Image (cartoon, rainbow, N blue to C red; front, side, top):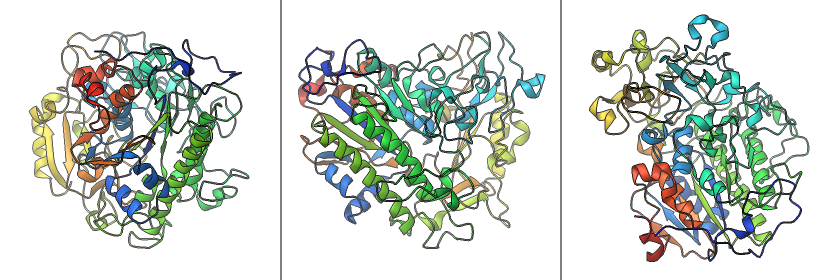
Length: 594
Protein backbone atom coordinates (compact mmCIF):
# COMPACT_ATOMS: atom_id res chain seq x y z
CA UNK A 1 0.00 0.00 0.00
CA UNK A 2 1.41 3.39 -0.98
CA UNK A 3 2.05 6.04 1.68
CA UNK A 4 0.21 9.30 1.04
CA UNK A 5 -0.24 12.78 2.44
CA UNK A 6 -3.48 13.79 4.15
CA UNK A 7 -4.16 17.35 5.23
CA UNK A 8 -4.21 18.19 8.92
CA UNK A 9 -3.38 21.34 10.85
CA UNK A 10 -0.07 21.40 12.71
CA UNK A 11 -0.04 23.19 16.03
CA UNK A 12 3.00 25.29 15.06
CA UNK A 13 2.02 27.74 12.29
CA UNK A 14 4.07 30.57 10.78
CA UNK A 15 2.36 33.83 9.85
CA UNK A 16 3.48 36.60 7.57
CA UNK A 17 5.97 34.60 5.52
CA UNK A 18 7.45 36.77 2.78
CA UNK A 19 8.69 33.79 0.74
CA UNK A 20 5.89 32.30 -1.37
CA UNK A 21 4.66 29.06 0.19
CA UNK A 22 4.17 25.96 -1.95
CA UNK A 23 0.73 24.73 -2.86
CA UNK A 24 0.29 22.83 0.38
CA UNK A 25 1.59 24.57 3.49
CA UNK A 26 4.00 22.79 5.82
CA UNK A 27 1.50 22.95 8.66
CA UNK A 28 -0.65 20.53 6.71
CA UNK A 29 2.10 18.01 6.07
CA UNK A 30 1.31 14.40 6.93
CA UNK A 31 -1.83 13.50 8.87
CA UNK A 32 -1.16 11.17 11.76
CA UNK A 33 2.61 11.54 11.45
CA UNK A 34 4.33 12.81 14.54
CA UNK A 35 7.47 13.64 12.61
CA UNK A 36 6.90 16.62 10.30
CA UNK A 37 10.49 17.68 9.63
CA UNK A 38 13.80 16.00 8.82
CA UNK A 39 17.14 17.64 9.59
CA UNK A 40 19.82 15.93 7.48
CA UNK A 41 23.45 16.57 8.45
CA UNK A 42 26.57 15.31 6.71
CA UNK A 43 29.74 15.51 8.78
CA UNK A 44 32.04 14.89 5.84
CA UNK A 45 34.74 12.38 6.77
CA UNK A 46 33.11 11.23 10.03
CA UNK A 47 33.73 7.50 10.42
CA UNK A 48 31.65 5.24 12.61
CA UNK A 49 34.72 4.84 14.81
CA UNK A 50 35.01 8.63 15.16
CA UNK A 51 31.50 8.72 16.58
CA UNK A 52 32.25 5.85 18.96
CA UNK A 53 35.52 7.40 20.12
CA UNK A 54 34.15 10.91 20.64
CA UNK A 55 31.17 9.67 22.66
CA UNK A 56 33.41 7.41 24.78
CA UNK A 57 35.82 10.29 25.45
CA UNK A 58 33.01 12.70 26.45
CA UNK A 59 34.11 15.01 23.62
CA UNK A 60 30.67 14.92 21.99
CA UNK A 61 27.91 15.60 24.54
CA UNK A 62 25.36 16.55 21.85
CA UNK A 63 25.96 13.47 19.72
CA UNK A 64 25.95 11.32 22.85
CA UNK A 65 22.59 12.76 23.90
CA UNK A 66 21.14 12.22 20.42
CA UNK A 67 22.39 8.64 20.56
CA UNK A 68 20.35 8.03 23.70
CA UNK A 69 17.22 8.57 21.62
CA UNK A 70 18.53 7.22 18.34
CA UNK A 71 19.37 4.24 16.20
CA UNK A 72 23.11 3.93 15.54
CA UNK A 73 24.24 1.99 12.47
CA UNK A 74 27.86 0.89 12.89
CA UNK A 75 28.46 -0.75 9.50
CA UNK A 76 27.27 1.94 7.12
CA UNK A 77 28.80 2.25 3.67
CA UNK A 78 28.88 5.37 1.53
CA UNK A 79 28.69 5.41 -2.24
CA UNK A 80 31.51 3.92 -4.28
CA UNK A 81 33.36 6.09 -5.29
CA UNK A 82 33.23 7.76 -1.89
CA UNK A 83 33.47 11.34 -3.12
CA UNK A 84 31.33 14.32 -2.08
CA UNK A 85 29.34 14.43 -5.33
CA UNK A 86 28.22 10.76 -5.52
CA UNK A 87 28.07 10.68 -1.71
CA UNK A 88 25.59 13.54 -1.58
CA UNK A 89 23.59 12.05 -4.42
CA UNK A 90 23.31 8.73 -2.59
CA UNK A 91 21.81 10.53 0.42
CA UNK A 92 19.15 12.37 -1.57
CA UNK A 93 18.36 9.92 -4.40
CA UNK A 94 18.76 6.48 -2.86
CA UNK A 95 20.96 5.46 -5.79
CA UNK A 96 24.51 4.74 -6.91
CA UNK A 97 26.52 6.25 -9.79
CA UNK A 98 25.20 3.43 -11.99
CA UNK A 99 21.72 4.97 -11.88
CA UNK A 100 22.32 8.59 -10.90
CA UNK A 101 25.27 9.21 -13.23
CA UNK A 102 27.38 11.12 -10.67
CA UNK A 103 30.85 9.57 -10.43
CA UNK A 104 32.93 12.48 -9.13
CA UNK A 105 32.63 16.25 -9.03
CA UNK A 106 35.37 16.26 -11.68
CA UNK A 107 34.90 13.33 -14.06
CA UNK A 108 34.30 12.67 -17.77
CA UNK A 109 31.38 12.34 -20.19
CA UNK A 110 31.92 10.87 -23.66
CA UNK A 111 28.97 12.78 -25.17
CA UNK A 112 28.87 16.27 -23.64
CA UNK A 113 30.94 19.18 -24.96
CA UNK A 114 33.39 21.52 -23.18
CA UNK A 115 32.12 24.80 -21.71
CA UNK A 116 31.85 28.00 -23.68
CA UNK A 117 34.38 29.72 -21.40
CA UNK A 118 37.25 28.10 -19.49
CA UNK A 119 36.48 27.41 -15.85
CA UNK A 120 38.10 28.85 -12.76
CA UNK A 121 40.02 25.61 -12.29
CA UNK A 122 41.42 25.64 -15.81
CA UNK A 123 39.11 23.33 -17.75
CA UNK A 124 39.50 24.68 -21.31
CA UNK A 125 36.52 26.25 -23.03
CA UNK A 126 35.68 27.33 -26.54
CA UNK A 127 37.21 30.73 -25.77
CA UNK A 128 40.61 29.00 -25.77
CA UNK A 129 40.38 27.30 -29.13
CA UNK A 130 38.07 25.92 -31.77
CA UNK A 131 38.97 22.37 -30.71
CA UNK A 132 36.78 23.01 -27.67
CA UNK A 133 33.78 24.12 -29.71
CA UNK A 134 30.48 22.28 -29.22
CA UNK A 135 29.69 20.19 -32.29
CA UNK A 136 25.90 20.09 -32.49
CA UNK A 137 24.27 16.74 -33.12
CA UNK A 138 27.54 14.88 -32.59
CA UNK A 139 29.21 12.99 -29.78
CA UNK A 140 31.85 15.32 -28.34
CA UNK A 141 33.45 14.22 -25.06
CA UNK A 142 34.73 16.38 -22.22
CA UNK A 143 35.90 16.46 -18.67
CA UNK A 144 32.97 17.40 -16.45
CA UNK A 145 33.44 19.82 -13.61
CA UNK A 146 30.80 20.46 -10.96
CA UNK A 147 32.67 22.30 -8.25
CA UNK A 148 33.88 25.83 -7.43
CA UNK A 149 35.36 26.44 -10.90
CA UNK A 150 31.86 26.85 -12.33
CA UNK A 151 31.28 30.05 -10.40
CA UNK A 152 31.76 33.60 -11.67
CA UNK A 153 34.52 34.16 -9.11
CA UNK A 154 35.37 31.28 -6.80
CA UNK A 155 37.83 33.47 -4.86
CA UNK A 156 34.88 35.29 -3.26
CA UNK A 157 32.72 33.81 -0.51
CA UNK A 158 29.61 34.67 -2.55
CA UNK A 159 31.07 33.04 -5.67
CA UNK A 160 30.91 36.33 -7.54
CA UNK A 161 27.12 36.20 -7.66
CA UNK A 162 24.73 39.09 -6.97
CA UNK A 163 24.85 38.57 -3.22
CA UNK A 164 26.16 40.28 -0.13
CA UNK A 165 29.68 39.34 1.00
CA UNK A 166 28.80 36.29 3.08
CA UNK A 167 25.83 35.09 1.07
CA UNK A 168 25.90 32.72 -1.91
CA UNK A 169 23.64 30.58 -4.05
CA UNK A 170 22.78 29.35 -7.52
CA UNK A 171 23.12 32.80 -9.11
CA UNK A 172 26.86 32.42 -8.52
CA UNK A 173 26.97 29.74 -11.25
CA UNK A 174 28.32 31.06 -14.55
CA UNK A 175 26.35 29.16 -17.23
CA UNK A 176 29.17 29.74 -19.72
CA UNK A 177 31.43 27.63 -17.51
CA UNK A 178 29.11 24.63 -17.60
CA UNK A 179 29.52 21.68 -19.95
CA UNK A 180 27.18 21.80 -22.94
CA UNK A 181 24.75 19.37 -24.50
CA UNK A 182 25.40 18.87 -28.24
CA UNK A 183 22.00 17.21 -28.62
CA UNK A 184 20.12 20.14 -27.09
CA UNK A 185 21.36 23.15 -28.99
CA UNK A 186 24.69 23.17 -27.11
CA UNK A 187 22.90 24.60 -24.08
CA UNK A 188 24.67 24.50 -20.70
CA UNK A 189 23.95 21.50 -18.49
CA UNK A 190 23.04 22.78 -15.04
CA UNK A 191 24.06 20.46 -12.22
CA UNK A 192 20.52 19.56 -11.19
CA UNK A 193 19.83 18.47 -14.77
CA UNK A 194 23.14 16.61 -15.05
CA UNK A 195 21.92 13.90 -12.65
CA UNK A 196 19.60 11.29 -14.11
CA UNK A 197 17.16 10.68 -11.27
CA UNK A 198 14.89 12.70 -9.03
CA UNK A 199 15.63 13.39 -5.37
CA UNK A 200 13.83 13.59 -2.04
CA UNK A 201 13.76 17.35 -2.61
CA UNK A 202 11.74 16.90 -5.77
CA UNK A 203 9.32 14.46 -4.12
CA UNK A 204 8.84 16.54 -0.98
CA UNK A 205 8.50 19.80 -2.88
CA UNK A 206 5.90 18.28 -5.21
CA UNK A 207 3.97 17.17 -2.14
CA UNK A 208 3.85 20.75 -0.86
CA UNK A 209 6.78 20.70 1.54
CA UNK A 210 9.15 23.64 1.89
CA UNK A 211 12.78 22.60 1.25
CA UNK A 212 16.21 23.98 2.13
CA UNK A 213 19.87 22.95 1.99
CA UNK A 214 23.32 24.45 2.56
CA UNK A 215 26.57 23.18 1.04
CA UNK A 216 30.11 24.12 0.01
CA UNK A 217 29.64 25.02 -3.70
CA UNK A 218 26.86 26.73 -5.63
CA UNK A 219 26.55 23.69 -7.92
CA UNK A 220 25.53 21.50 -4.97
CA UNK A 221 22.04 22.83 -5.49
CA UNK A 222 22.08 19.56 -7.44
CA UNK A 223 20.05 18.22 -4.49
CA UNK A 224 17.02 19.69 -6.26
CA UNK A 225 17.17 16.98 -8.89
CA UNK A 226 16.17 17.50 -12.53
CA UNK A 227 13.87 20.39 -13.34
CA UNK A 228 14.50 20.85 -17.07
CA UNK A 229 15.05 24.55 -16.42
CA UNK A 230 17.88 26.87 -15.43
CA UNK A 231 16.50 26.96 -11.88
CA UNK A 232 16.68 24.26 -9.16
CA UNK A 233 12.99 24.82 -8.51
CA UNK A 234 12.60 21.89 -6.10
CA UNK A 235 14.85 23.75 -3.66
CA UNK A 236 13.11 26.66 -1.96
CA UNK A 237 16.09 28.08 -0.05
CA UNK A 238 19.73 27.30 -0.84
CA UNK A 239 22.83 28.74 0.81
CA UNK A 240 26.35 28.08 -0.49
CA UNK A 241 29.20 30.22 0.78
CA UNK A 242 32.18 29.03 -1.30
CA UNK A 243 34.55 26.88 0.76
CA UNK A 244 37.46 27.35 -1.64
CA UNK A 245 37.20 31.15 -1.64
CA UNK A 246 39.83 33.39 -0.10
CA UNK A 247 39.53 33.65 3.67
CA UNK A 248 38.31 37.02 4.93
CA UNK A 249 37.57 38.25 8.42
CA UNK A 250 34.01 38.00 9.76
CA UNK A 251 33.71 40.93 12.18
CA UNK A 252 32.05 40.19 15.51
CA UNK A 253 31.49 36.55 14.57
CA UNK A 254 32.20 33.53 16.77
CA UNK A 255 31.72 29.81 16.36
CA UNK A 256 29.67 27.53 18.59
CA UNK A 257 32.71 26.75 20.72
CA UNK A 258 34.01 30.32 20.87
CA UNK A 259 36.52 30.64 18.03
CA UNK A 260 36.79 34.35 17.18
CA UNK A 261 36.49 34.88 13.41
CA UNK A 262 37.16 38.63 13.47
CA UNK A 263 40.82 38.23 12.49
CA UNK A 264 40.77 34.79 10.95
CA UNK A 265 42.50 35.82 7.69
CA UNK A 266 45.85 36.27 9.43
CA UNK A 267 46.09 32.51 9.96
CA UNK A 268 46.02 31.46 6.31
CA UNK A 269 47.05 32.70 2.91
CA UNK A 270 44.64 30.49 1.01
CA UNK A 271 41.10 29.13 1.23
CA UNK A 272 39.00 28.12 4.24
CA UNK A 273 40.18 24.49 4.11
CA UNK A 274 43.82 25.35 4.85
CA UNK A 275 43.48 26.27 8.52
CA UNK A 276 41.95 24.48 11.49
CA UNK A 277 40.15 27.58 12.81
CA UNK A 278 39.07 29.17 9.53
CA UNK A 279 37.13 26.05 8.54
CA UNK A 280 35.16 26.28 11.78
CA UNK A 281 34.25 29.88 10.93
CA UNK A 282 33.19 28.81 7.44
CA UNK A 283 31.00 25.98 8.74
CA UNK A 284 29.44 28.30 11.33
CA UNK A 285 28.03 30.44 8.51
CA UNK A 286 26.02 27.42 7.38
CA UNK A 287 25.11 26.43 10.95
CA UNK A 288 23.57 29.87 11.43
CA UNK A 289 21.54 29.35 8.26
CA UNK A 290 20.14 26.09 9.66
CA UNK A 291 19.25 27.80 12.93
CA UNK A 292 17.51 30.56 10.97
CA UNK A 293 15.47 27.94 9.09
CA UNK A 294 14.44 26.36 12.36
CA UNK A 295 13.35 29.79 13.56
CA UNK A 296 11.13 30.25 10.50
CA UNK A 297 13.43 32.61 8.65
CA UNK A 298 15.43 32.69 5.43
CA UNK A 299 19.05 31.50 5.57
CA UNK A 300 20.38 34.97 6.44
CA UNK A 301 17.49 35.62 8.82
CA UNK A 302 16.25 38.60 6.84
CA UNK A 303 12.70 37.41 6.13
CA UNK A 304 10.11 34.97 7.39
CA UNK A 305 9.32 31.69 5.68
CA UNK A 306 8.02 28.23 6.63
CA UNK A 307 10.16 25.89 8.67
CA UNK A 308 11.39 23.43 6.02
CA UNK A 309 10.12 19.87 5.87
CA UNK A 310 13.56 18.75 4.68
CA UNK A 311 16.65 20.82 5.40
CA UNK A 312 20.25 20.51 6.50
CA UNK A 313 23.92 21.08 5.67
CA UNK A 314 27.34 19.53 5.36
CA UNK A 315 30.26 20.14 7.73
CA UNK A 316 33.79 20.46 6.34
CA UNK A 317 35.60 20.78 9.68
CA UNK A 318 36.18 17.08 10.40
CA UNK A 319 37.36 16.36 6.87
CA UNK A 320 39.88 19.19 7.14
CA UNK A 321 40.89 18.00 10.60
CA UNK A 322 41.63 14.56 9.19
CA UNK A 323 43.62 15.71 6.16
CA UNK A 324 45.48 18.86 7.09
CA UNK A 325 49.16 19.07 8.01
CA UNK A 326 49.68 22.56 9.40
CA UNK A 327 51.81 24.66 9.70
CA UNK A 328 53.92 24.02 6.63
CA UNK A 329 56.89 23.13 8.85
CA UNK A 330 54.90 20.44 10.64
CA UNK A 331 55.15 16.73 10.05
CA UNK A 332 52.40 14.14 10.30
CA UNK A 333 53.55 13.18 13.80
CA UNK A 334 53.49 16.70 15.25
CA UNK A 335 50.88 17.25 17.94
CA UNK A 336 49.75 20.43 16.16
CA UNK A 337 48.96 18.53 12.98
CA UNK A 338 45.58 16.99 12.23
CA UNK A 339 44.77 13.36 11.68
CA UNK A 340 45.01 10.36 13.98
CA UNK A 341 47.52 9.01 16.47
CA UNK A 342 47.00 5.35 15.69
CA UNK A 343 45.07 2.68 13.80
CA UNK A 344 42.19 2.70 16.31
CA UNK A 345 41.32 6.26 15.35
CA UNK A 346 42.52 8.24 18.36
CA UNK A 347 42.31 11.83 17.10
CA UNK A 348 45.19 14.22 17.54
CA UNK A 349 44.25 17.38 19.49
CA UNK A 350 43.63 19.51 16.40
CA UNK A 351 41.25 16.99 14.92
CA UNK A 352 39.55 16.39 18.27
CA UNK A 353 38.88 20.14 18.41
CA UNK A 354 37.20 20.00 14.98
CA UNK A 355 34.88 17.22 16.16
CA UNK A 356 34.13 19.13 19.37
CA UNK A 357 33.18 22.20 17.31
CA UNK A 358 30.82 20.19 15.11
CA UNK A 359 29.21 18.70 18.22
CA UNK A 360 28.69 22.15 19.73
CA UNK A 361 27.27 23.46 16.44
CA UNK A 362 24.77 20.61 16.23
CA UNK A 363 23.94 21.49 19.83
CA UNK A 364 22.90 24.94 18.64
CA UNK A 365 20.50 23.34 16.16
CA UNK A 366 19.04 21.05 18.82
CA UNK A 367 18.60 24.01 21.18
CA UNK A 368 16.78 25.96 18.46
CA UNK A 369 14.47 23.01 17.75
CA UNK A 370 13.70 22.68 21.44
CA UNK A 371 13.09 26.42 21.81
CA UNK A 372 10.64 26.34 18.90
CA UNK A 373 8.94 23.21 20.27
CA UNK A 374 9.98 21.35 17.11
CA UNK A 375 12.33 18.75 18.59
CA UNK A 376 9.63 16.11 19.06
CA UNK A 377 8.40 16.54 15.49
CA UNK A 378 11.85 16.45 13.87
CA UNK A 379 13.94 13.44 12.89
CA UNK A 380 17.66 14.27 13.00
CA UNK A 381 19.80 12.17 10.66
CA UNK A 382 23.56 12.52 11.01
CA UNK A 383 25.89 10.74 8.61
CA UNK A 384 28.67 11.56 6.10
CA UNK A 385 29.01 11.82 2.34
CA UNK A 386 32.36 10.02 2.58
CA UNK A 387 35.01 8.80 4.99
CA UNK A 388 38.77 9.44 4.80
CA UNK A 389 41.72 7.12 4.30
CA UNK A 390 43.98 6.11 5.91
CA UNK A 391 43.07 6.30 9.57
CA UNK A 392 46.35 4.61 10.52
CA UNK A 393 49.02 7.32 10.04
CA UNK A 394 51.64 4.63 9.43
CA UNK A 395 49.85 3.53 6.27
CA UNK A 396 49.95 6.92 4.51
CA UNK A 397 51.95 6.75 1.29
CA UNK A 398 51.62 9.71 -1.11
CA UNK A 399 52.28 9.25 -4.84
CA UNK A 400 54.12 11.16 -6.26
CA UNK A 401 54.58 12.61 -2.78
CA UNK A 402 57.76 14.16 -1.48
CA UNK A 403 61.05 14.37 -3.37
CA UNK A 404 62.77 11.03 -3.49
CA UNK A 405 59.49 9.17 -3.91
CA UNK A 406 59.62 7.78 -7.42
CA UNK A 407 55.99 6.68 -7.52
CA UNK A 408 53.80 7.56 -10.47
CA UNK A 409 49.99 7.81 -10.43
CA UNK A 410 48.11 5.66 -12.95
CA UNK A 411 47.30 8.66 -15.15
CA UNK A 412 51.01 9.38 -15.47
CA UNK A 413 51.72 5.82 -16.58
CA UNK A 414 49.11 5.78 -19.34
CA UNK A 415 49.00 9.47 -20.27
CA UNK A 416 49.12 8.97 -24.04
CA UNK A 417 45.88 6.97 -23.94
CA UNK A 418 43.89 9.65 -22.12
CA UNK A 419 41.62 12.26 -23.76
CA UNK A 420 43.41 15.59 -24.33
CA UNK A 421 41.12 17.54 -21.97
CA UNK A 422 41.79 15.48 -18.91
CA UNK A 423 44.45 16.59 -16.45
CA UNK A 424 43.94 18.78 -13.40
CA UNK A 425 46.17 21.83 -14.02
CA UNK A 426 46.45 22.46 -10.29
CA UNK A 427 48.37 19.30 -9.39
CA UNK A 428 49.33 17.51 -12.58
CA UNK A 429 47.24 14.45 -11.75
CA UNK A 430 44.51 12.94 -13.82
CA UNK A 431 40.92 13.72 -12.98
CA UNK A 432 39.27 11.66 -10.25
CA UNK A 433 42.61 10.69 -8.69
CA UNK A 434 42.63 10.97 -4.92
CA UNK A 435 42.93 7.63 -3.16
CA UNK A 436 41.35 6.07 -6.22
CA UNK A 437 42.03 6.43 -9.93
CA UNK A 438 39.17 6.41 -12.40
CA UNK A 439 40.37 6.33 -15.98
CA UNK A 440 38.44 7.25 -19.13
CA UNK A 441 40.36 6.39 -22.30
CA UNK A 442 40.34 8.12 -25.66
CA UNK A 443 39.47 4.75 -27.19
CA UNK A 444 37.85 2.11 -25.03
CA UNK A 445 39.25 -0.53 -27.39
CA UNK A 446 42.66 0.16 -25.80
CA UNK A 447 41.49 -0.99 -22.37
CA UNK A 448 43.31 -4.34 -22.31
CA UNK A 449 46.55 -2.76 -23.53
CA UNK A 450 46.34 -0.04 -20.88
CA UNK A 451 45.60 -2.56 -18.13
CA UNK A 452 48.77 -4.39 -19.15
CA UNK A 453 50.76 -1.19 -18.72
CA UNK A 454 49.29 -0.68 -15.27
CA UNK A 455 50.07 -4.27 -14.28
CA UNK A 456 53.69 -3.81 -15.39
CA UNK A 457 53.97 -0.68 -13.23
CA UNK A 458 51.82 -1.77 -10.31
CA UNK A 459 54.51 -1.21 -7.70
CA UNK A 460 55.30 2.34 -8.87
CA UNK A 461 51.60 3.26 -8.76
CA UNK A 462 50.85 1.49 -5.49
CA UNK A 463 48.14 -0.54 -7.20
CA UNK A 464 46.13 -3.00 -5.14
CA UNK A 465 43.40 -3.95 -7.61
CA UNK A 466 42.38 -3.10 -11.16
CA UNK A 467 38.75 -3.20 -12.26
CA UNK A 468 37.82 -3.23 -15.94
CA UNK A 469 35.50 -5.02 -18.32
CA UNK A 470 33.15 -7.37 -16.49
CA UNK A 471 34.45 -6.29 -13.06
CA UNK A 472 33.46 -2.68 -13.82
CA UNK A 473 30.12 -3.73 -15.30
CA UNK A 474 29.15 -5.53 -12.07
CA UNK A 475 29.32 -2.18 -10.25
CA UNK A 476 28.40 0.35 -12.93
CA UNK A 477 26.88 0.33 -16.40
CA UNK A 478 29.24 -0.85 -19.16
CA UNK A 479 31.31 2.08 -20.48
CA UNK A 480 30.67 3.45 -23.95
CA UNK A 481 28.27 5.74 -25.75
CA UNK A 482 24.52 5.41 -26.36
CA UNK A 483 23.43 3.67 -29.55
CA UNK A 484 21.09 6.56 -30.30
CA UNK A 485 22.32 9.70 -28.50
CA UNK A 486 19.78 12.27 -27.42
CA UNK A 487 19.44 15.24 -25.09
CA UNK A 488 21.24 14.97 -21.77
CA UNK A 489 20.99 13.27 -19.34
CA UNK A 490 18.82 10.16 -19.27
CA UNK A 491 20.66 6.91 -19.93
CA UNK A 492 19.84 5.34 -23.29
CA UNK A 493 20.52 1.95 -24.81
CA UNK A 494 24.18 1.19 -25.34
CA UNK A 495 27.20 2.13 -23.25
CA UNK A 496 27.21 4.64 -20.43
CA UNK A 497 29.20 7.73 -21.45
CA UNK A 498 30.14 8.42 -17.82
CA UNK A 499 31.40 5.00 -16.70
CA UNK A 500 35.20 4.89 -16.46
CA UNK A 501 36.97 2.26 -18.57
CA UNK A 502 39.26 1.35 -15.69
CA UNK A 503 39.06 1.82 -11.92
CA UNK A 504 42.34 1.48 -10.02
CA UNK A 505 42.07 0.74 -6.32
CA UNK A 506 45.45 1.41 -4.69
CA UNK A 507 46.92 -0.29 -1.66
CA UNK A 508 45.45 0.95 1.61
CA UNK A 509 47.08 4.23 2.55
CA UNK A 510 48.20 5.21 -0.95
CA UNK A 511 47.03 8.70 -1.89
CA UNK A 512 47.68 10.15 -5.33
CA UNK A 513 48.85 13.60 -4.32
CA UNK A 514 51.80 15.93 -4.51
CA UNK A 515 50.32 18.16 -1.79
CA UNK A 516 52.68 18.14 1.19
CA UNK A 517 49.97 19.53 3.52
CA UNK A 518 47.74 16.49 3.06
CA UNK A 519 47.87 13.18 4.94
CA UNK A 520 44.71 11.43 3.80
CA UNK A 521 42.04 11.59 1.10
CA UNK A 522 38.74 10.06 0.07
CA UNK A 523 37.09 8.68 -3.03
CA UNK A 524 38.13 5.05 -2.85
CA UNK A 525 36.44 1.79 -1.98
CA UNK A 526 38.48 0.99 1.16
CA UNK A 527 36.90 0.61 4.60
CA UNK A 528 38.26 3.94 5.86
CA UNK A 529 36.83 5.66 2.78
CA UNK A 530 33.38 4.14 3.00
CA UNK A 531 32.52 3.28 6.62
CA UNK A 532 30.82 6.33 8.13
CA UNK A 533 28.63 7.14 11.09
CA UNK A 534 24.86 7.01 10.71
CA UNK A 535 22.56 8.06 13.52
CA UNK A 536 18.79 8.58 13.25
CA UNK A 537 17.40 10.32 16.33
CA UNK A 538 14.09 11.55 17.70
CA UNK A 539 13.00 11.95 21.35
CA UNK A 540 10.47 9.12 20.94
CA UNK A 541 13.05 6.62 19.64
CA UNK A 542 14.48 3.96 21.90
CA UNK A 543 18.27 3.73 21.68
CA UNK A 544 19.49 0.86 19.54
CA UNK A 545 22.68 -0.20 17.82
CA UNK A 546 22.34 -1.96 14.48
CA UNK A 547 25.36 -3.96 13.32
CA UNK A 548 24.01 -5.25 10.03
CA UNK A 549 25.38 -3.72 6.82
CA UNK A 550 23.48 -0.69 5.53
CA UNK A 551 24.24 2.04 3.01
CA UNK A 552 23.87 5.80 3.04
CA UNK A 553 21.66 5.38 -0.04
CA UNK A 554 19.02 3.99 2.32
CA UNK A 555 18.70 7.41 3.95
CA UNK A 556 16.67 8.81 1.04
CA UNK A 557 13.80 6.27 1.05
CA UNK A 558 13.87 6.32 4.86
CA UNK A 559 13.29 10.09 4.90
CA UNK A 560 10.26 9.72 2.65
CA UNK A 561 8.92 6.89 4.78
CA UNK A 562 9.36 8.99 7.94
CA UNK A 563 7.36 11.80 6.36
CA UNK A 564 4.58 9.51 5.19
CA UNK A 565 5.58 9.65 1.53
CA UNK A 566 6.19 6.77 -0.84
CA UNK A 567 9.86 5.71 -1.10
CA UNK A 568 9.10 4.30 -4.55
CA UNK A 569 8.54 7.85 -5.74
CA UNK A 570 12.34 7.95 -6.09
CA UNK A 571 13.60 6.80 -9.50
CA UNK A 572 16.79 5.27 -8.10
CA UNK A 573 14.92 3.40 -5.37
CA UNK A 574 12.74 1.73 -7.99
CA UNK A 575 15.70 0.98 -10.24
CA UNK A 576 18.03 -0.40 -7.57
CA UNK A 577 15.54 -1.73 -5.02
CA UNK A 578 17.00 0.40 -2.24
CA UNK A 579 15.31 -0.52 1.08
CA UNK A 580 14.54 1.77 4.01
CA UNK A 581 16.83 1.51 7.01
CA UNK A 582 16.00 -1.37 9.37
CA UNK A 583 14.79 -1.04 12.98
CA UNK A 584 13.05 2.31 12.57
CA UNK A 585 9.51 1.44 11.58
CA UNK A 586 6.74 -0.79 12.82
CA UNK A 587 5.86 -3.91 10.86
CA UNK A 588 2.91 -2.03 9.33
CA UNK A 589 5.19 0.75 8.09
CA UNK A 590 7.91 -1.59 6.84
CA UNK A 591 5.63 -3.92 4.91
CA UNK A 592 4.77 -1.13 2.51
CA UNK A 593 8.34 -0.95 1.26
CA UNK A 594 10.47 -4.03 0.91
